[in-house]
Picture (tube, helix red, strand yellow):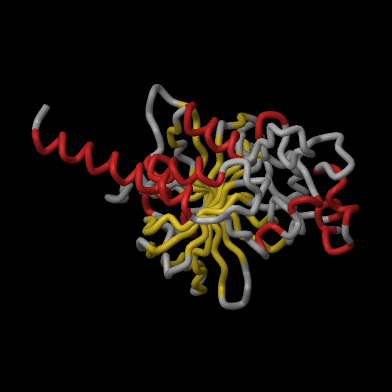
Length: 292
């Protein structure tokens, strides 16, 4: 083996070992605001607190049942119109300090530093956190992919914009961001509310460079299902390994026999919602655009 490559592997192994030692040494931290609702709803269809009943659990969650602009939806070509006026996504992401949190129904990476922003119609939306749903929540022409990543942004006026990225299990290929986070995901697995610092995380590792995307107005996909959320779903599907997908599912799948927040095998996707005559656009650069 080439000496430089050998030293690199040793360095990576040392970092992973250090992360695992940190997990063992640092007591579990309770995530306050992020987990306060976790025992009050679940993804188990048919459960008394399952997705079909979210709107009945609290009056503040009424939109989950009565809202007309709910998410996720099926991105059907029959309802999508081309809109080149949307333009390329205008974002400026940077590496920032972050923490990983097991919220019971998902694994979230919260940015503790300035991770950059997304600008839409002159308004800046600060990137605050990202998290995963499996299987994917949005479908494309009825096809449901294996995983969906949400990059959540918030403006100064508390408006929310989410960029969603779809993944499918592919021939041995793994996702670079999940690869970086694997030891920390194992660290917080099956410990609702457990939080650990992970150091610098670069959002561009997740975002990628794809240009084509869908756009529509919807809602949060968990209670309180707040509407007025601007959704951007990247069209290009990325690759995740079967091992990484299972790691995420196992982390929120309580095998102790306690009441599950997720569905069978750690699945945490909200059922599809009605489109209700909403406009769904797709941005695709002109074939003559040199960036396409």
